[in-house]
Image 1 (tube, rainbow, N blue to C red):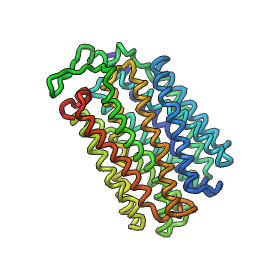
Image 2 (cartoon, helix red, strand yellow):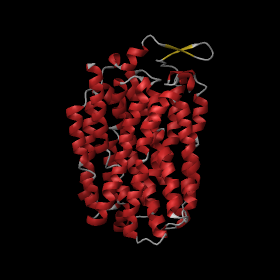
Image 3 (tube, rainbow, N blue to C red):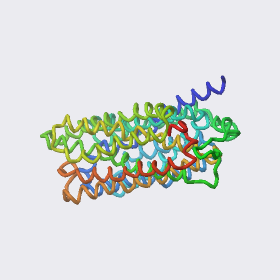
Image 4 (tube, rainbow, N blue to C red):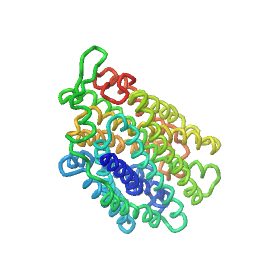
Length: 431
């Protein structure tokens, strides 16, 4: 009973701290219209800045997972959340050129990169596989809500008081998030005491060919590799979509006759709503995956989003309402399966190496998020010339390239289903 109370309190505190600590993630995208104008940034420059942030995440994420296994997951989450607030706040006064913008976004990405994976590992030790999809889905929902919060808060404030004030008011909440971690999060149980190990120690899972497979498979890495390959395709699509949906909706509004300043504020709110749809999607689909299996749930969500991705850019000139509906559809499904790659991986590896394996998966996944925004911006510039994204008129190929990357998900799932380790994931034969 005491353990269950600790687990629930930790989950609640981690969700709140994530909601506050990740608000700086998209505050740059939310106010990008004003920064682009002030520093004369091109589409390629904007993509490079977005990629710098993702690069910071990739550099730190493997190290943070490994370090969390060694010195404690709570400690890593606390210091990472605090550092995110510090560097995002310093951006307000330190951003004075394209280079300084890139440096501060890189430092913020380095800090934020050490929050999510150690947090996933911490919660995975508190909750068994049968509940893990919903738990990690809820944690990811908080992450998505924080992304949306960056747009919701920064864009309207920037329209009235300037982009620096918008950045500031999405940076300060991270300090509260760090305090919550310090006061209310319980350190994860040791690997030997985790809910996963208690259940798994004597468990052997039967496979279709009447063989058995242990939950600890140090020599068989195909399952973890394949689900991580699918995660790469998922991340290619998701983060570039999130990073560019604000500028895209601004361009849609400007093309309809809205004045640029008003369009930027309006687009920030719309983008926030679109991203926010991923919050209930993450939790709902996590719970669904506990029932129908990880592979089936991932496949459905991935196909629903990537098919629509191919068409979004080509409806640029359609009525705004229709564009919003299509973008909202993608916004729901593009993140619905995000936590499931993590949940599935934690169910295939030992808790002793869980942080390291999650770090590896995040590193390869987020590596694609360095390339995808840059590729999106480069393609956009190739078709529209050296103009601000606000005035770009040909978006189809840029969004289509996101859909192409997303095809990696169903391909990897097809191969994963053939692996015995797939039976270790929640849902078992239902996968």
